[in-house]
Length: 208
Picture 1 (cartoon, rainbow, N blue to C red):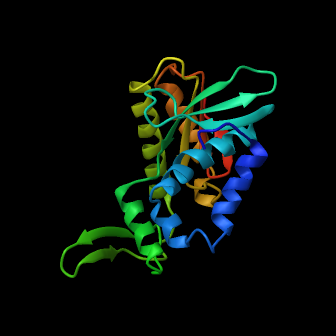
Picture 2 (cartoon, helix red, strand yellow):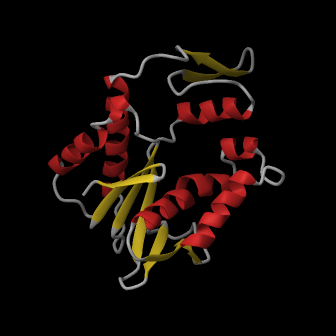
C-alpha cells in the first residue's frame, strides 16, 4: 500500500481482501487488526476519493513514521495531492460493535456496548430496531465536525487535502446531513486545507 498503484490495482486489492474468504476471514476484517485497520481506515477512503476525482492516476499510503499526510493521489495532468485521512466513525462503541459482529452475534449501530468483567465480555443495551431520528443526524454532524477541528489544529505544512471517513449517509433521515455539515464548517472560518472531503463509504462529497 506504500507502493504507488493505479486505481485499478488498488481496486483489485480491495476486492481481493473482501472476497477471498479462503485467505482473509470475515472475523479479521471486522476486528480491523493489523493491515485490515489500515485498509479500512486509510486505504479504502483514499481510493474512494481518488475514484471521485477527475484525472486521478494512482494512490499510495505514506510510511507510518511520516509526521505529515497519510497518503498521496497522483494525477495525470495536475500536481500530486497530499492527503490527511481521519476516521470520524471509529469510536470505542463502534469498535465493540464490530467485535460482537466478528463473534457472530447480531447487533445494531443503534445499540450501546460496554466491556464488562463479570461475566467477561461485552454488554449490549438499547433497542436493535430503534427508529432513526434527528439525534443520529446530530451525532454524525458532531463527530465529523470534531474530526475536522482536530485535524485543523494538527495541520501539517504541505498537506492540501483533508479526507474524513464516515458511515454511509444515504438514509432518509440523513438527507440534510451534508448540507448542514458544510454550513457548520464554513461558520468556523477559512480552513488550512485547500479542500475538505467526507467519504460516506464510497460516496465522496466535498465540504469546502
